[in-house]
Length: 443
Length: 112
Image (cartoon, rainbow over all chains, first blue to last red; front, side, top):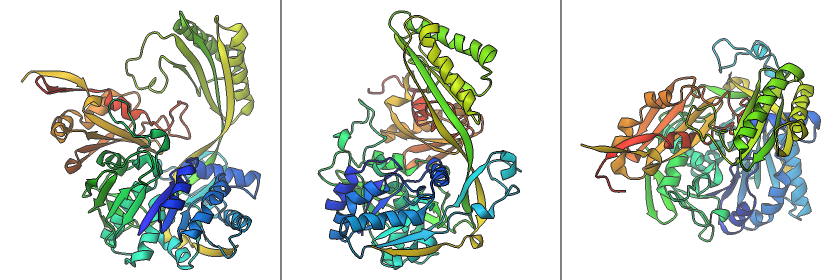
């Protein structure tokens, strides 16, 4: 069977997904778009407007691929339902009707949200003894990671589009494979291998040349036009990872290796709701250009409980900056920083939880203790502050902007922004306390 | 045997990922012949000692010898993680290049 990735994160590109829908000869096109952050943002969006809370690019993506997928008998699997799966299913149905695709069937996988089952006493796994009440912030939402047990009934409805909320990312790929080949739900070895294929595919272009290029060391052909990956999967779960021949990017042993351990801790124990996968025995072989065969992952029994992401209101993040350039720029930027530190403390009451970077001298690695240049001719003073108190954050922005007239010579390019924040923790829940269901919609 | 120092970046590539406040960086030898010296010199203890202010928790190393790769799992290494950090790179995507900037000793007569 042939599966393609059409998105590896919430804001991923659409064009290469359309290419795969049209030319990929796929059985399934999979859009993976949920992260810990985007899930909490979905909850926040839904609180503000009960009609929202799904992936903001859902309608655009469906408009781009639904017609071609129907023509080519390609089914769609996606977690773009995020925090409002039912509404998302209605959106897909609406797009299908607009496109004249009458009869298109959408199956929604419901039941990942467990917010109502949690209270102040619920234990969090991030620290020993920590509970939800200890966090001391408004709870935004709690979602269990569902697996193939929840997705398979949706596939069995024959739906053209299966849409979910929080499910484990590799399960989006594993469920169609299990449905296709009829694997037993306790064939841990095969489930481990299928999970590896899903894990390799779930981040889209990160296996076809994205998040990879390093000029002079790792060159990527036509990096502006990387294609999304395709997996050709056999009945034993072994697969060839490849891409469309006319797409840019590359699939090589190196791109596959890097993705194999992306966000993996112990390669022998990669936990999902479906299996404890073992990637440590994986075999990779480059048979020809842009074709890498992946096999021999294993697995043992699945974890007893499901992981839950618990999101809390994180207040707001304010970021503001002013730049200095030309001769003596570094000294002027340092002086601007010193002025801000003094005024935040003495005048503005902005205390504690802020950070000032000098972009061009030291920013991303400023706290890593590595050697940084003493001087540069183009330096940006960047301030970041998180707070539940929006007024305080606005005061910080004002103080930074005031540097234009009140600070060192030649300061320019002020920009400031305030974005809502979320904070996420983890918890566990018994499988029996989660009851996923499937709801079918027809265009 | 006389040796010289080079940046790990010359002989290895790497990728960073995040989960909560834990960062992992996988490091892969371009040439399988270099894997041995990388494995010998790039210990978990060295990673922890190289960035003591950044990595507040423990560092564990997992080895995939047959693929010539090492995986470093660094706890409490993301200033709270993507939703809490005040840094520009709150995912720690660039932590891979912190590690690739470390030096390793290679034989003096090793080809470029």
